[in-house]
Amino acid sequence: MKPLTVSFAFAVLAPIASAQEASLGDVSGMLDFRIGGADGESSWLDGDFGKLGLGGDDRDFKLDARLARGVLVWRPSLSWSTDLYLQLEVDPEQDDVIGVGEAYLRFKPLPSGPVRYSVRVGAFYPPVSLEHDGLAWSTTHTITPSAINSWIGEEVKVGAVEGTVTAPLADGQLSVTGALFGYNDTSGTLLTFRGWAMHDHQVPIGGSFPLPERTPQYWSFRKRQAHKAEPFREIDDRVGYYARAEWRAADPFLVNFTYYNNAGDGRSYEDLQTSWATTFSNVGFTAALSDDFHLFAQAMIGKTDWIPLANAPIPYVDDVGFRAVYVMLDRAFGDQGVALRLDAFDTADRDQAFSYNSTPETGWSVTAAWRNQLAPGLLLMVEGLFIDSDRPSRTADGIAARQSQLQIESGLRWEF
Image (tube, rainbow, N blue to C red; front, top):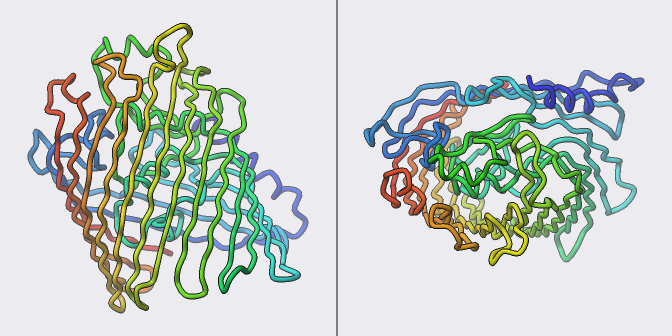
């Protein structure tokens, strides 16, 4: 593992050594095997502009069989109110195949009244996604998460101190969460250079993802940026923050709002990784239409800026706005279930200064998935995903701006 991965993991694990009565706690895990394929462009994971985790071969359908993900989770109890969460990841797409996914301490005292408190400290995802409600931040309705939550998984992991207060309110409960964080300065890199994507890869601590291969002219203008993104980095020593409010009704109904600001200065850089100034607002909504029929929806709007220019007609080399929304219906039938999701997304190039710097895009997708709980801990999923996107910067590489792809994938997930 990379030095940053090891050092951060030891920093979180250090309190165990001084714990007087630490329990070994629970150990669980998951193996996720996939067979599937896609047509169209090569995947963004191969340095192209393809929007999916899989890609075509000269536009022909390309079949792939692999271990998509392996996870080991350790949750020891350090005291009656304090526990540890440590998640080890296996992802063949990473330079370091084994890495640390999330690692944090959580303090959750017993409530003395209707108000409850909790605090966690470490590396984790902000509570934005409505889809990742399974073991080790996995999805349970579809194989591939929405564009919004695919991006959260790749670029919005933080090293944070987070506190939550939950209290009864109007026949339901209100939760308010606030956090101060670092190690997320490069958030926005992938959205600018590649745009939105839909996949289930998650960045480990110290991990990286490739940026699209571009012309020498393109990269000569960005000598401060490596041809890869390292999302879990602290560069400018500034503290970011996020705040979240959620109301959950007594009947199955939930609405939440999250505001995130990484407080990046937009100019600092280290090891050819730059600090981006990235903010977004997210609204989430779920409702039970019946006992087995649920509606999920999220909408996000934000912006990311990089390298302010002095005495220039534009304020930034890159000034990118981004938006995305999805609506998903899920219907359970005993041990089986189906889900249908519609996504729409876009980015806006707000500097409008350089033709070869064109980053706007528009796109949409539809996802249909079926699942079957074959046995306790054994889940079979089959999914079809069609995506269509228009990104002018593709033309600089000699391909049409508008591209579409079809991905069909099956997954067998074993949890233990």
